[in-house]
Length: 237
Image (spheres, rainbow, N blue to C red):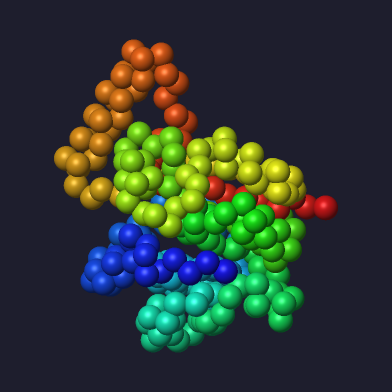
């Protein structure tokens, strides 16, 4: 199991005020994930390698009762246990947890992990996640988007722990090469700028970017946000 915490460029985000981190991420997850959680009643949720507390906060806000967190980072383990005492936090490698438990989950959430994995690690992870999911339920994945029209260069060069950055097509190809029993949906993430002016500037930037791509005879990417949200639904057998 890789341990990328100390060298990860976003590790310092942990030391932002929690209220800002909570509120911003809750807004993004609410926009991105609401349609999936609306379909579930009393979901059983597993988060792997979270290292931060964002998704636990979201689950708490939408009244998810059964949430389990697996990671090996001491700081976030202690902080999460303190903030969410009603949830289960386990400090272990997820392969070890798999050996000792036969639980099945409705939702398995992974954020900004896949880009840190090599070929062997990503294959193991997809196969393990498939075995943990109930039939017909979902794996949710956030990661940098190599087709981003916004800031892909920062994802590529500012973090030495990134091994591969994926586009919509390349990620789907990788998943299908490992396990073809997922229905894959890749979508743009919600751009959570709060002011009307900043949202206007964002839309203006996209408008002129599309003109530039057209002028250069390049197709404008379907997934253009700097993060890509991928939802993998396990096919019912």
